Length: 165
Image 1 (cartoon, rainbow, N blue to C red):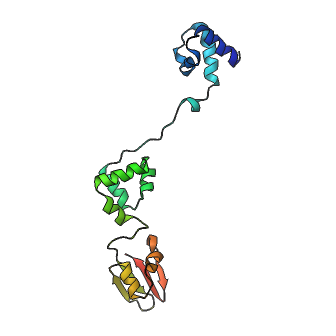
Image 2 (cartoon, helix red, strand yellow; image 1 turned 30 degrees about the vertical axis):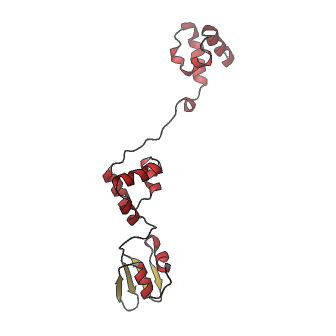
Image 3 (cartoon, rainbow, N blue to C red; image 1 turned 120 degrees about the horizontal axis):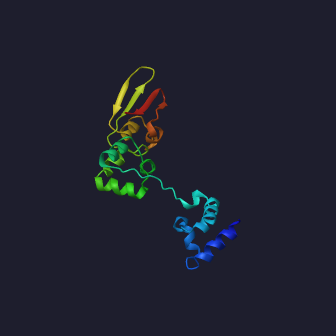
């Protein structure tokens, strides 16, 4: 038996259904058509008939707060939970975590982050309340020290080590 014969046998018995009957072959209960049904079912690929859906993890207030505190971005949270990025943004706004998110972003300017300046040769240590103040004290142009210490990196120049606390 080939595919054409099997399809013609079924369509001869069920002319009103047309191709729709092939969507659910289990509805065909005739004994003389079972061979054709088994043949068509064996020709089908399972991946085409069954759609696999990615599981979406529910995200509650505490989980979202913990992920933000760990430094996840919107894309990272969306990837971990299976939600859309726009949904994550909406949940951050709904829960009131927008300010927390902008403080904890790994590549953004964090409000209130101190800068530690350590002299490698003498061991002298200076602490500044912000990156801007540290940059001004050492004569760097605006934003230079911020760019050099971005992402938790340590920067060394003229015997001084600069790092965010």
